[in-house]
Length: 148
Image 1 (cartoon, rainbow, N blue to C red):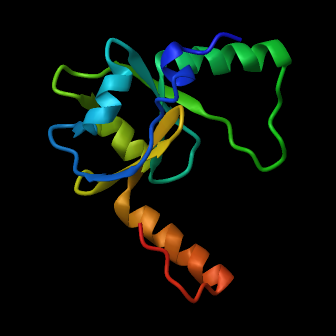
Image 2 (image 1 turned 180 degrees about the horizontal axis):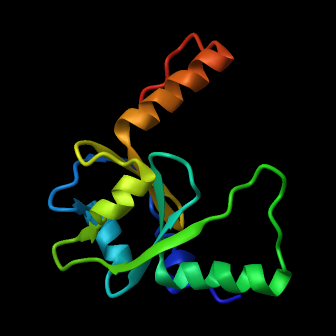
């Protein structure tokens, strides 16, 4: 399967960035804007409250082809992803997340976190993500708190 040259060169979405949503737009980190230059993105949701997964258009199609060619099925407990929208990145480096998508997914516009995940990135509502981290810490009785 062909992989986009930019991924072969090791340019991936990395890091954690705090942002807010203004006029339904989120400003992406400069280094991510370069990865998405002249390429659209797919906005995916797996039904988990407070999060979205963003895939570059070419990577979305790579995964789609792989799924269909291998007839992959979900494992027990796995959630399917739903493609909610297709967008392009603005010249200013912003991604548009509609009010409707935010309402469906539970993402508040005040504070969000962008998390790089190699060939994709995630957008999380900060309060929901912080609560998930607290729950994980409590479940495993971590003595050192995780701070991200």
